[in-house]
Length: 103
Image (cartoon, rainbow, N blue to C red):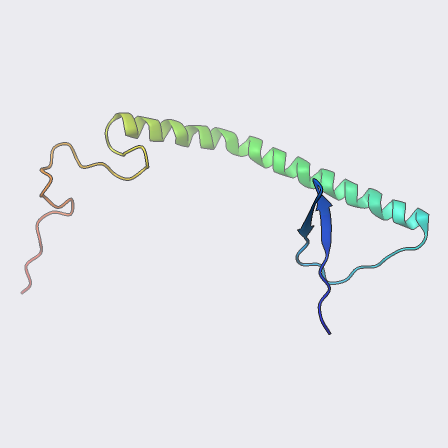
């Protein structure tokens, strides 16, 4: 049996819905309205959760931005986030110290 593809229309564009295992279609208009209302409730709850998560994460993200700006201003990292060469070390010197001698 070939699986059925489920799509929803979002901003006039079809988007696939993954993870759907079965679909029940109700012919009764009252049941269909109740199901649609429940779907809206779940969608509103998920939207509220996403907003609360973003709001809770905002202070941590702002702190990370400040820390990165401080490291960039101190010359420890480049704008792309990669470590900068230590200012007190010659370019030829390894940041890991001298090579280890084998015994």
